[in-house]
Image (cartoon, rainbow, N blue to C red; front, side, top):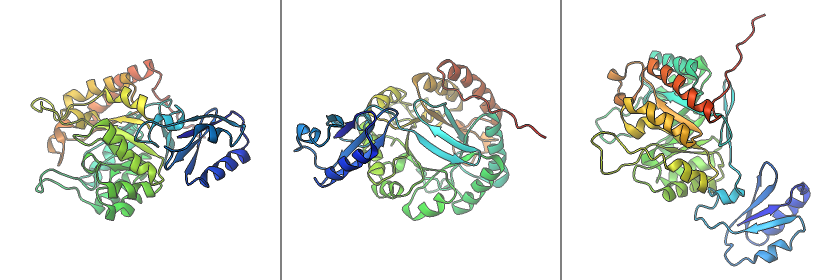
Length: 354
């Protein structure tokens, strides 16, 4: 249930209404929109009378029930306003959101060595990426596949961050690793295999770093949003949803089926920012450019693209990785579509030496 306050409602009145509603056994959450303030009511609201709530204050404009099972993730919960996730990076704040410039995340599947990750970071930064992705801990189907270098790789990501100025997005697989990963990551990634790891979702929800939640390989949209609800309910409102392809009946020509229809569906259902990962979504580097362009046209807020200096020798996911040269070309192509839909970031002015 949400309570929409009239434009110009004094802060003291918003606080008074929230305090009174809390005495009803509810948990009021203040949501500041561009024009109005909404109070989200979490708790047992089925028995509440809308007219009774409206009588609390003449400043209440509207009281509405949230029909979706994912309450906090629902677009209704914010009265239709999209949310923004602002991430502090060495180069300054970067904002993920529906009305913000497209954010590109790029880098290898796994951190392999210092030279490789630092050089890749510098290359993707020069092409226009804002974040470096790279796995220190890797969940793999086979126990014999490369699992990542673990904590030592986190130190290499920190060096790449310092050398490039990029923000860092890396996966946390286990609650035991949350603290050490959080010391390096600017955004914590919950991978597809952990989307239903509810203990991990609660833990990342209880800390304040933004969370990138990937869709499970066989998850429905509702299951995905309910996973996001775990994070939001634990107190962390900075969640980005990442579509990375789902498992369907045809896996002969592509690793997964990239569900681009998820973009308009999510836009209707949730206020959370949306990211598309065409690398995992197809599993083939030759398909990545087409799907990345289509994702921008569909309205994504962000892209995650795998880049490796030598995909043929990559320790993981080489077939879906672009070379730095391929990424340079792709960014030029993406700019054409990005500018057409008014989502491409303006180039930063060069520093003036004095």
